[in-house]
Figure 1 (tube, rainbow, N blue to C red):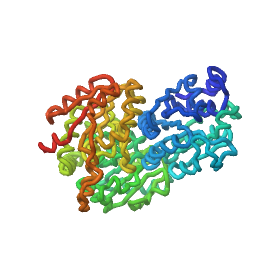
Figure 2 (figure 1 turned 90 degrees about the horizontal axis):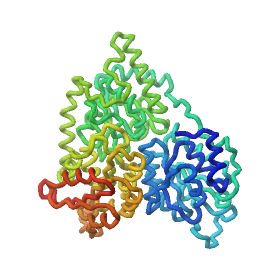
Figure 3 (figure 1 turned 180 degrees about the horizontal axis):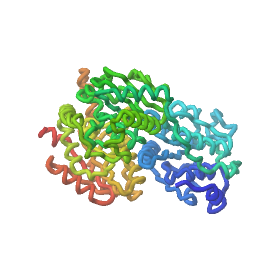
Figure 4 (figure 1 turned 135 degrees about the horizontal axis):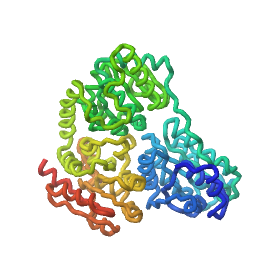
Length: 571
């Protein structure tokens, strides 16, 4: 997807009126393969927008900058590129910071571009339009780094630095602020700087640590693999290693489908459930790949393995976080897993045990794989299924009815809604990473719909079904019209529990009479119609599956309203 340096020069000289910093920044982004941006045009950011058409960059105009940030996240998860958001100065930037906080917490690549006051106007407090005390500082408190640049060359270098971090470090959001006089002024950036940097080999682990890890895994009788978001770009290597070791694979929700959840060795993204935690804790060797195993993923459970703990992470600071590590392997997950595979295979061939048997390096689902240990996991999966269902039978029934009609390659959008974390996360089984859009740690409302829009923009040929609660949908309801405007075939399922049911229960548990949590509902189906989509009403529990299937098969925006009380009566 990358342009050549020659094409960058051509873009600078043809079809664009002004050779300024805005053009330079958008050109280098295009050369890295970014062909879509999210944002809202505003008084001060128009020079970022001027070159988009000439560069072949598609703008998605959200109806709130928070939605732009979440849309960029959904797009990024499908493309492997950072999402890019253009905000205006002041309020536009601040509106996007919730999305930036999400990207930071969930380790997602995001670039936020904003204009800033012209040089000399910093901290002036003179009543300028969109004046903000310290926008760079405000963003810097949330993102990995925030820079106010002072030339087009600095702005372009900041983009290169961001891509370097995304490729070789822990992906997290960045913010680049370009003062108005720089943004609109003549670019000083040489065309040679506008070419994308070539990809270099990713870093592997140190040999001494690697040797210890290979020995520990090779001698283990009951190894287990735990995979987080940092393992998603190593799906093929992870699958091959699981099969070589005959090791069950458990993922966090951020690591969902790092190994196909239909693989016989997969225990899916159920790390929060006691039955699955027991498998991990009873093992004699646990390999944790790309996860900090934060409390938000464990739901009060404890990961405390009886045996040796090996951790792979891109950052040395992570290998002792939350769960102790006996062996830390610092490096890129795909590179380190390849090292482990090579070492284990070599040792097994030398020992006459056949190092390559049963391994599929393509990362295919591997459903033909079989072993006594894989067979034993059938019972664990059944126990975990029962535990998940017991949490909320009504929500589990709704999620199951929806999952039964999902196309095999569907992308599922979720939110910090009970239907997501009490239902869809357990019943949806997926083969491909980045197919379940969710924020388990930051746990924000308003993520599901705009992230689903971004995913559909990036993957127009895959069905995208957003399943959220009424409270979460109302946080982003304005983005329904964004889906219509972008002419997307998108299904939204609104599971209506009458407001903020989780907080309602929290209040009751504390002896507080429910206050501020039972909310008035709109006519959701009519609202979808008003936005230019098609609304569907479920009036009987038996209608849910067929109604959702009909919505998925239809074109345009389709919203299905599901009153939860229909299922509470039957669960």
